[in-house]
Amino acid sequence: MICTTVTALAYRDRSPHQIVPRPADLGRSIGSALTIYRVLRAEDLLTRRGRATPPTVRLVTAQIAHGPNQGWSWDITYLPTPVRGVFLYLYLILDVWSRKIVGAHVYDSELATHAAALFERTCERTQLDPRGLVLHADNGGPMKASTMVATLARLGVLPSFSRPRVSHDNPLSEALFRTLKYCPSYPSRPFADLPAAADWVEGFVPWYNHEHQHSAIRFVTPEDRHTGREAAILAQREVVYARARQQQPERWSGATRNWTPMTTVRLKPTRDDLLDQERRAA
Image 1 (tube, rainbow, N blue to C red):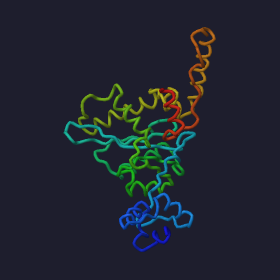
Image 2 (image 1 turned 180 degrees about the horizontal axis):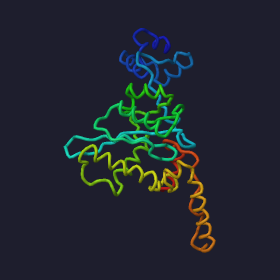
Image 3 (image 1 turned 135 degrees about the vertical axis):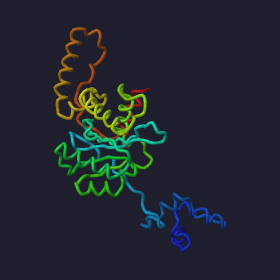
Image 4 (image 1 turned 90 degrees about the vertical axis):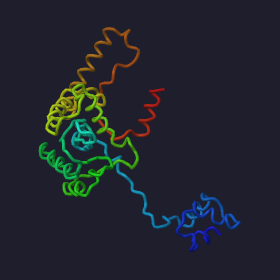
């Protein structure tokens, strides 16, 4: 009876959840929606019903890096101006593995052509062949516009986008913006004009790359990690801590601080990572 009902002309384009109430209105029951799904699956009739297209699967898990220039993340943030409601737009590209800012520019508009031009200039300046590089972004207009998508396809870049309505799928760029807007040198007043904003960004990028010790990469600078100097730096710290523990063992109740270089970076935390964070916080 179930197969006869769900394949009838009146029901064949409806989902099981939509089918169940209609026979009930006529005084009969053909089973629950779960029962209908089970029968359809057993009869090899479980296909997408209706004209709606299947949901799009967003590629995020591909953004795993084991070294520099394997994956980049980019985004746009607003910079205030003295005119209420008028903003400048800072485009930033950073390396997922090292957290180094590899490209930055301030524009007076939010356009895909600006993003495409900055990406190409960044590749030229760093002498990088971008074929095979994964570039991650959120679902903003400039990120998904045809100009940007066409540029990435021409250069052989693999695009990766955040899932719809998932706010933590592009955390590295968001964390960078927070560091930028809360650093001591960030102006307390709006930027006077585009050149003023560009001058400030030109000073921020070297500070962030060469002086800022990043908490997510064992407190080395992004430049140290990008160029491979972090191994020697962290090894030296390990020696210092081991010597301190040997000299004053009573001060140590467990292992010394972890100075092991991070060998893999994921764009977003896995389920196990989140569970570990919850356990540590408890």
